[in-house]
Image 1 (cartoon, one colour):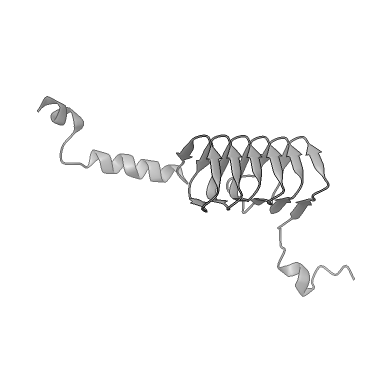
Image 2 (cartoon, rainbow, N blue to C red):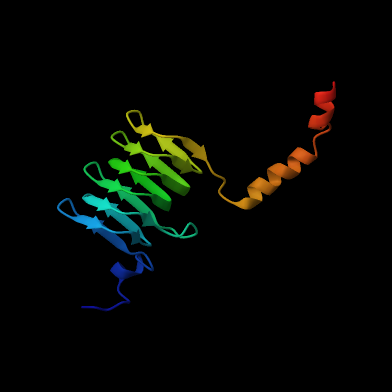
Length: 148
């Protein structure tokens, strides 16, 4: 009955799935891994490690009042606070974000709403270093352009 070797448990290795149901309200910060599905209300900040495969889903009737910092997110409800997604952020048709959005890769469906700034963040520091190195390889520098 509780055999860990059966086929149904093999697909969930290390992945925890958590549901905040429609009739639930959580007050306080949440630190999670795996998948967090919010159909109810959370008043607090939500965090997951950037290098994990964690994902948050805010359902159409779900609401978060606080900061969200996760690798991946799909939002179709209300978020009142800043959002930071290191990998992928999807704002579905009924998504409303009241706060700044920091993203690496973003998808916004028609009808989604952001009341704040959209700011791109790099997925890793090596990308920033590569861009800085490319800038140094240019055949001219900014000083020579300003002098002419």
